[in-house]
Image 1 (cartoon, rainbow, N blue to C red):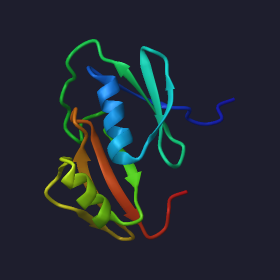
Image 2 (image 1 turned 120 degrees about the horizontal axis):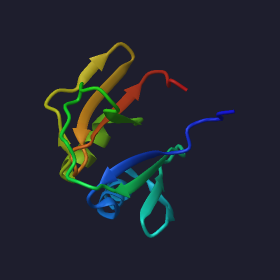
Image 3 (image 1 turned 90 degrees about the vertical axis):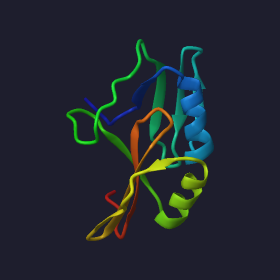
Length: 124
């Protein structure tokens, strides 16, 4: 029986560099280095695996079919935005204001989409 999601993999031409960026800028921590892949964990225990890509990645748009972003919960979207912006994160021009939530999209160094989300009431 399925008990949950164990990890999510991101293929990268430079998986160790990308994992280091997540550790340094998004407060993830190292879990396991197999010598071929690296696993890191968010503060709420979500595991990302970074694996070597076989070829240069395609550059999908945010609404193309498939997995498109990782949402990062924050308790202060303004402070998180300023911290990441000062470290060179590429943010979309506009923040999205929704009933009960504020969202701001950005990309990691390899162009993967992420977004900050601050909710009045957490989903879980």
